[in-house]
Image: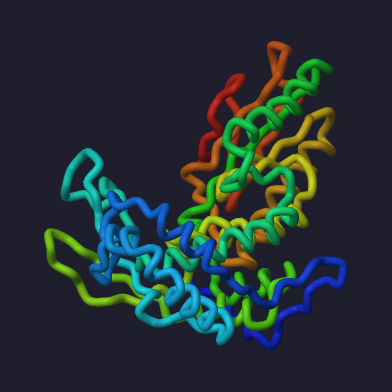
Length: 336
């Protein structure tokens, strides 16, 4: 899979109706607050600098770090030493020879994460009003619970009317790792991020690398040409920016929690079945354009009905794999 190449000078200018943010300046009190709230129990970063030292010396380090952070933002550059990640595989369960039985812990430079957390506060305030209400992932006041309440309220209304609802659950395969850096910068610019701040995010994403630590042995560095940086502070928010325009493809009947989505339709006739399939086709086209792939093994669905038999029993397809319903509230399956 190759990330789409989008040159910075080809970016669409921000919509004039949207607010614009082109720079940031941090203040010592916010840097000190982040330093003093560091968790000393967290693992040390790749450069070996203990979190306990930064926390204990927060007051003495704040002026210098604040000046360094503001210089980074003013020049639109991040030190290359802050871009590396140490990946530590942690065994979960099952056969130890199977790599899928390990959870990856990503350790980043703690000084860089202090800067990231300072930036995130301003970035959150700017971007969060631009996210659609159907997105419930990584946003304050929203959760899986709020998503389920909103979604099943809509389904319940259709059941109260004696109507059938078909729901398809979709999962993006390695969604965070597949984010195109150039595509993300394009979307940031379209949401009003410009100037030195956009240049800073370009530097933040460019030239990232990772090393794997196993049994005390560190393997050689590998480049990371794509993805919302795992283990980073702004990574989840950057991913939401990347998938937010999905709502332009399907403005209705979709619910999101980060990279998990539900696509549904109240079925009153064959036209509604065709409409749901068109929505799935549109989602597929959107994912192809932005180099994201659906994990068909995890695409499943349900059919909600109040009558003994479905009013309409129609096959739907995702990635040319048909999904079908064999009983009420069942799991959709694959057809050979």
